[in-house]
Image (tube, rainbow, N blue to C red):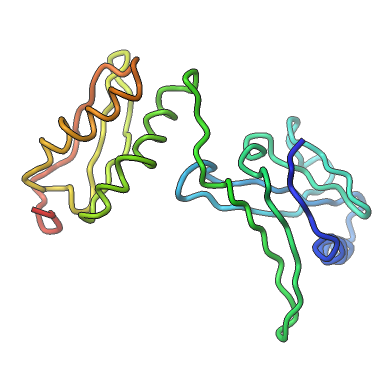
Length: 194
């Protein structure tokens, strides 16, 4: 079960909102879009009876049920849903410190492992030059097709970056990766770093 905390003030606030929906048995559903990526967003929505997914985890609270999305559950570890009053009324907040933390293992799909290393090791370095690289596809039983963007697109050093940086790092970290290929159109040079 998820170690998510929903404070008493948040439960009271949400119970009041749910009561206004005039739907017997309505609860909330908590999920994360794009979990484990820099773009992760923690979301909370109404969940009418029957709208929960079959693998959601139910948390029975005093006045309603909170449904936790199964795919999001590991990323909601240590999350806190709170409601704080202020001069303007109040605000519901969701703090999920692990929402953007990629979770992979040696048996994770190759795409997940590639995206993990792109986000945690490669793109932070490329970002210093206004660039980034993303995975487009896996072909030929283990060749990653990548696309550069930002300052990397059209950069005169992209071949060296691909071979000495990106490919070397990915192949060291992912033994079953056979190689990488760049599909970027580098003729567009207006934002190129070099």
